Amino acid sequence: MTGFGVYVHWPYCTKLCPYCDFNIYRARDLDRAPLRRAIVADIHNHAARYGRRPADTIFLGGGTPSLLSGADIAALIGAVDDAFGLAPDAEITLEANPEDAPRFADHAAGGVNRFSIGVQALEDVALRALGRAHDAASAVAAVEAAAATGKRVSLDLIYAREGQGVEAWAAELEAALALPAEHLSLYQLTIEAGTAFDRAVRRGRLAPPDDDRAAALYEITQAVCDAAGAPAYEISNHARGPAARSRHNVLYWTGGDWIGVGPGAHGRITHGGVRLATKAHDRPENYTAAVSAGGVGYGDATPLSRDEHGEETVLMGLRLSDGLARGPAEALRGRPFDADAVAAFGEAGLLEDAAGVLRLTPPGRLLADHIAATLAQ
Image 1 (spheres, rainbow, N blue to C red):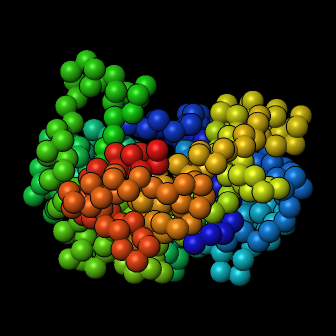
Image 2 (cartoon, helix red, strand yellow):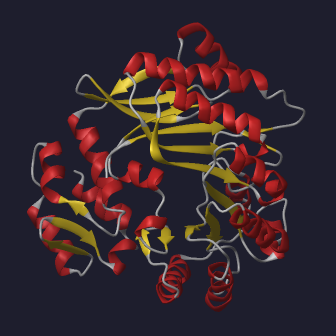
């Protein structure tokens, strides 16, 4: 898949989760209007700079964009439509917290047609440990409220939590699969530098599962989801059929173009035959000032070298169960993959090389980053 998308980052949260390293800030008593106006202006100025092309996807992420009203959401979607146009079947996703369920109907009326709900766990003790503001019952109710709008529903869960057993996780995952959601993003807990969890690990107050337990949890994840008809189409993402896949994320993984607007947002845009990497200013006040002064919220648009573009293509494309088309990737890199490395991974049962496609095997997915980094050299 290739295409064009728009990522909108709303950086505010009512509570900062201890595992999160995203560009986020506490909402407090916030006047939404100045940042919303800056994002709208940024969208229009991107179109003026790089040209109009219909958007296949919009992803409203964060932070917590579900804090926004339906009218706010409609204004952001309307800006994309005015500046670029929307494809007739555009996917418009809103990341949402369960406690914002009373606004879901308004969000849908504002143009959202896919909810991505941050459930994170279906155990109250785990939710408290993750710093979440909701409990398991309200998470279930939120998924049901999103489904009641008639829009598509995805949910996120975090596993490989401290003390989590394989059987307990399997039961929790089965409960999640029984909910009215067609897509699940299942993330192994990663201790990111600079987070509260990172500090807790370094002080000996948090002990995530070791590699063997994490691998066992990953393997049971695949088995439970396969049995429920929701196989992985990407290492951490599962869908009940191709139509349920996240089209916006597939755009990332297959090398499509997208603009990133809002504080800290990343973008990739091909302009004049050059692949440009953009990153917006992190702090909301710096972002709004940049939009006012220069028209766009990023400081620089950095051209990616052939090697950098090729490396991104390999690192992202190998994550997909469909695999990485070898010919186009090698043409982009300007050189073939190392035959010895491909053969070695194949002999180890980690990589398949068939019909012009490189595809990770189930054991290979456990070593995806290592394999991709080796092949990207």
